[in-house]
Image 1 (cartoon, one colour):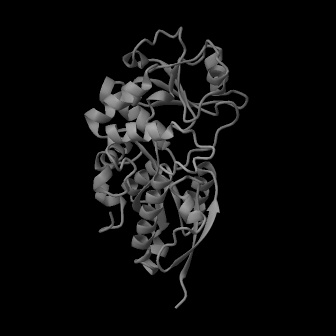
Image 2 (tube, helix red, strand yellow):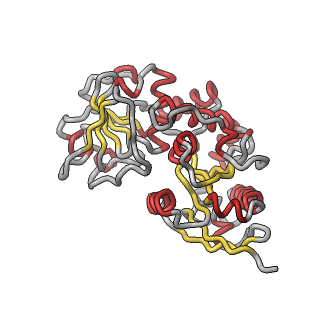
Length: 325
């Protein structure tokens, strides 16, 4: 019997490269891989179900599960995770000296329902009492028009959200003093250029992120892997095969970090940072699975509810195919 052919879309990460180049092959599956940026994948998958399986926005998927509107099933694979304290920026003259000072301020973002922003709003609420409804939100592009929301927004009535009109950008408004703060998935150009009109809310963001993890166990996960529900119904065994393949690909990626004979363009001090990461987060700091990441799955399931993206909290067990990970 020939292998099942599945189309799959993801970005070229070290933990997906073994699947992309064929070093790892899911048992019984022939993957036809499209290497695309997440911002290209997500609209195509969420709106058109363009792939049999793909990398997917965790918050968008979780919100759809909570709404009872998901046409996907997921496996507990961690494709992207990153702390987001470093992504909160303020104008130095806006009177924001501590996170609590964000209350009542004008805050811009490109996607109010993106996973990164969901986690940023969650940590501001949990750790500093800054609720989503306590600020005035502006949504638009950093330096160019923004994408439309990945999934339709139906925010609570007490959330004040304005969409930027044509011709305005978030960085332009921040530069002009029309915004007080910015939650940005990407490094703002004006920050990279050294503008005096922007600074990080958490200058020592690494210390803040470590403290947050030690206290909560949350290591924010941005993207996971989902299959179309019709594909899963037709081939229910495929989810477990894909999960095992992703686990092996991750193992290979971590093994390569220690290949001191072939570091190539990877900076030699990377090994030192890997050891630091293991000291803080545990030896398998990039573990896949339900239990290995339970605090993070629980957090996103709670945040999508408290932020009005889902009518109810979503439990980790609801997100994934049962019995995997």
